Image 1 (cartoon, rainbow, N blue to C red):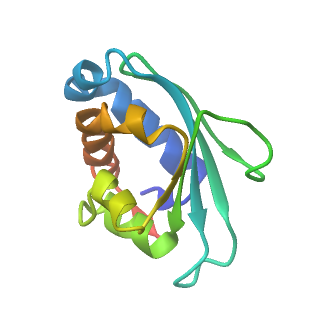
Image 2 (tube, one colour):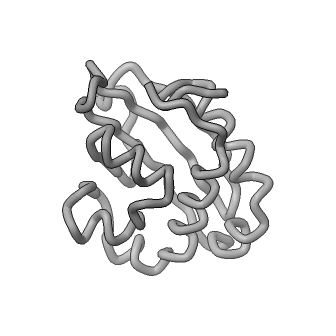
Length: 134
């Protein structure tokens, strides 16, 4: 079972995204890449950074980065480890998480708001990854 956060977890997530027909349909016009940043709390001792390239309903590339400065992306979605756990478990909606400041977004909020169904499908996919939390 992949641990979150880890390279193994993000690769399984990408595989499941590419198998998710509902995400493919919801994100058929989406073009944009992300840094998903997990900041330390609840026993997590350092920051973890995932690069995720999403393009027309598919996950083209994922990998862990050494730091947030390693790659420039269109979006940064960032929050503490405890909130990422809730997001993956389906306890926090990705858009409401932004509106309630559980997560921070850098990039066009307008573009994100036009893709709320795709965002929800991404989270639904994340909750399908068998996950062991650190």
